Amino acid sequence: MITPDERMDEQSQCRIYILANDHVLDQAIALLNSIRLYDAETPVVLIPYNNTYKEAAAVLGGRFGVTLFPDLTILEWLNATIEETFGAGFFARPQQFRKQAAWFGEGDRFLYIDTDIVVFERIIAVLDYLNHYDFICCDYQHRGGIENVFGPAILDAPGFSSSTLAEIFNCGFWGSKTGLVSASDLQQVFAECAAHPEYFDFSQKTSDQPIINYLVLKQIPNRFNLVNRAGGAPGNWAGSKFRQRGWQLFDPNMKRSLQYLHWAGFRLQPGCPYWALWQHYRYLNELKKGLNLPWLRR
Image (cartoon, rainbow, N blue to C red; front, side, top):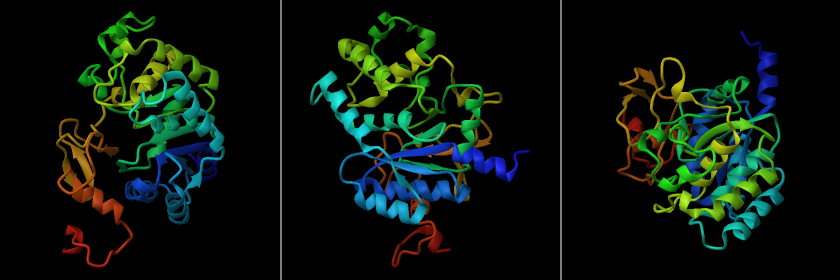
């Protein structure tokens, strides 16, 4: 069993990264409320999505101890490199590439989490798999085929086969080791991708996901999708049917409680799947005057 001192040392070497600005502050609060419900210690670092992040930094820092990414020049470098390599306007949301700053952060290991996620456990524990692998993800994106990531021409790219494409992942939740990918690695991959746009599917205006899948599937052979672990794993996409147990969810097909829920592809608003669940985590530890939420009416 891990001792308290060993856990503190482990946490000091791990980071959780989020990409956010003032516009998604409510989403970030919901995510952080869920993280801190199970884990008060792991450092969480804000990577600014753009220059409108001061309110988010102040609120998240004050309430959850979130710190700002220590070297903002890396974000500027990513912006400039993407524009120089692909051209201005190539991507619908080039700021999504800023999450790649995680490779150059502090600590030994990191977990990146999109803000349209809430977690249902001490989620940093998934980084224990990095004792055996260099990269982890945890989703069933691959079951949907290559759509929204690659085009059929990707099979002409060196090192890509049907079995490789079966490892496509969602870029909203993934972990790896600091420094595993260098600036020159990113530049080389960006250049290869810009030279072969036919490899990718940008028809649904996705930005970083095709390129980062190319990077990981090409550069990091020792990778593991946690849904392939022994005994299987629950789903985590908000478009799936789960059973609610209190303020957590249960996957009846896998007979397991969810580790997290991701609203990928949904706008978080009334009428979206599991809206009341998201509201619960957004206003956890708050009592907003006049708020008409189901748990306040019990």
